[in-house]
Length: 71
Length: 501
Image (tube, rainbow over all chains, first blue to last red; front, side, top):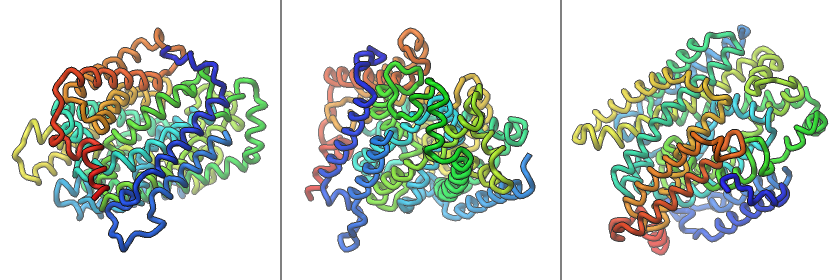
């Protein structure tokens, strides 16, 4: 059990799908974060679209998703 | 030996770092300046510092060596082993720590649980950093020995002197701003080596074809997912459970050297942004440290020790001038890791050990002095313990082994502490102590429990599970804190309320 033998039936492709699903899940969770929380610390008049940290997070997740999709 | 131009570049690099470090001495007037940079730093500097602090001599030499032996699966550590955890840190944990005006992670644990949890966590980190410093020094000395023929102890002492000086005088501001320059140098040097390497092996496609045609033992070299029965230390189950769920989070959320940088941010947005910006940069790291190892499979097949691959490439592939640049890049990675550990350990000792236990009523200047002296003492300790890393077969795995002793249990109590208000002080203390004990036992008798050679990922996972379960069970049977004592420490009692304002 300590060696996760019970998961030995999952193929490498199957494992890849699990990881890709994890990235999608994280992306969805990021979507749920309130806008006000994202911009906390920035005065309202200084908030710009490119400072939206959700956008930053999705870009990073997109790149890592593609990397795991390829390899 | 280095050519004249290379030697000049290396000396100029050392001189530049010292000058830059000394420049920031003028901004250190209080202990908050020394440990938190006066909470004025921008996200881009912090993000770059987080990334470069996480990549050192171990990664240059060790990861390229692992890539030589096992292929790209070692890249999991910088990809899935960093990005999700950095996002979790950015959006959940870092804002808490920043709002609380904390200096250390154990300080949070002390507020959430009790002083014994804080002290145990702090002492554990101090011990780890002391050992890890030795590993860093040893790795650099091995490389310098191969490249230049310098005696090991000469290399260690020269390195310690340069890093020690600017860290001692400039505090974390000097550490972060020198890290920025060091990351740029590291990227320029590293990408140059990779570009020349690709030229030598005929490009990416040619490299893949050649390696896959070298025999069946290379069939998984370009798969991030390794089967569960792999003999490498990176089965996908270990990557998912041990690395992604535990070690990565523990490292990015519970590691003082990482989190302390984010606490220097000028506001909460900068604190969050620093981690996400760092996550973006982090994904480039495998290109620097992993690709040279793959190229070396073609260029120097059959090396008995994969850790020799990168030094060989630097020595035989780079022309004069670029050797000096790459050499500086290597130093940049190593120095950024060492200076981070020095400053963070000084912070841990001053804030978690000295201030509460040794001298509670001293003035701020006194604590600043203690922090500086601790930096010097730790430096000496790191130098003296450096030969210990020679007892382990792989440098990088050695560090992971050290980490796996306590990362899992530490993360279990951080996670429960912030998300479950029912967690009690005795639950947290029990979970941490029992979890560390279990990790120690699993490592000691790993041959009996595990089928792979280096099961540090599994050890992390199972020690996390034990720490988690023990914390929950003990918490259920002990008296919880009242809600009013947990405001600012537990998720439901702070963030949601403030968002709804």
